[in-house]
Image (cartoon, rainbow, N blue to C red):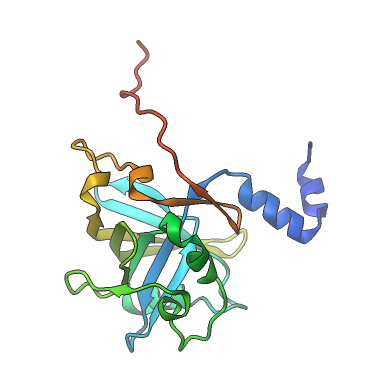
Length: 204
């Protein structure tokens, strides 16, 4: 298959959506938890979480355009400035996928999809109890991406909880040991298998 930019645009909309969403390969599958101002919880799956730096410890994720479709996660983060990122357990991919459904704002995906809200150190956003890797963040900035009206939401890590057995003495996380799922496209999930670790690469 060889496609030019124009040919990509001419593809059937669904085929183009699936192709371009999966072309980057397997990405992290994460559940982002938030509260609104009245402590109504929200949970949504994202595959766009990226590392942006370790000093300070920053993570970012992309939200889709919010003008036509309500984005409860983004609305809650703007109003409260806090959110959590929770790795999706391989044993709960079906429930995690279901959080993408458009539930009414007054219904919590935690309850509707079978996840348990967890509080860690009074952090002002809900964690997923079932996740072996849980990250609490405070909003630092939101960067608009003009070409397609998406936005990058950036947060600084405030709290981090990981299963001890999944972390090496050097700080590396074994995602296979942690039972973390990956995602390709919009609806294909993968188990992660550890292959090998290599030393820092140098020319010699």
